[in-house]
Length: 457
Image (cartoon, rainbow, N blue to C red; front, side):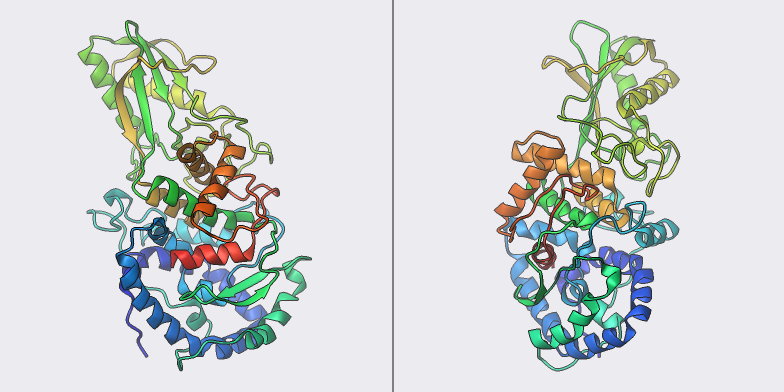
């Protein structure tokens, strides 16, 4: 049986398939491990698949005309497939999902299939995925997770709580899940909780924290928001200041791939200086946009660079764009040195090296060049696909700036919680110590995560 695809999902289709493919290795392993229980799950829930699919199709028409902030959350569909909401909800474990803090299966799949939809699908065409020449090919539509596990469409009915409990309770007792387990299953049409086991228990969520960060960023700043990196010239002087705006995807690579390019910024700066007959300058940098400590509480780590308002290529010391990598201990200075080298290639000499300490550009400084990041929707997609901690922490600070909170770990966490409250989501006893989920001080509930996913759907 073929079920017509709801219109609201057509735009999200490339995002959905990538997540489904990324988790496929884990699904296969899980299926083998719990095959008898998985078969029972499929038999129990398959009658509800058609009803929910039809209901979402009807609801999508109503959502299309809505102007509420929640419509922005549709862009998190890369993490919120119908099957994910229905079949699993959320199971929280105490700590990262593997020894590196990264979702290995997702990272490996995205790296090996970068030209088939890719982590950055549609980045060259704003929020219209895949329309630009040379953009990654659209991915095919993914089946729902329940159908993928062996279920099939059936009669118009939804499994009851007792039926779900009979199947899921034994599975949640698996020792591999650790000493504390919590889960929720919701009806994506109504948001009704169909099954809950500690659904309101706030546990360490690991990288599922990024779902909340994504939703808060899209709601607070908007899907089309771009992060600007600027170059200013202090009046009556030859002092040029590179001003960080908090874009960790600013790149020095020749192929910028649709992201903000440090080379383009150097081109524009050199042209502006030439018009002013300046070919020798002093160069400094400004990272005053951010507050608080730069180093995460986990310390120096291959999963996250020091969080500063100015860095290039996530401060990676190799040519990688995702996964673990050795990081610079001083991203702003390294970025400024790279910028000075690019200016030198364009005939602009820096009479002094980058300042030993950051400066704060004066309010009278004249902006002479700038570059902007890809849209926030693209940054969110890349963050969720690669479980990118650098982007997550940058987005948390964008939420803080939008909410009037300090752009720090603490301020970002407070701002995310504030934004989710505005969206009338069930918060309970939650806590955000960061935006990435690397901190063991984070606490989220299955009820919140399923509510976020249902809102996105």
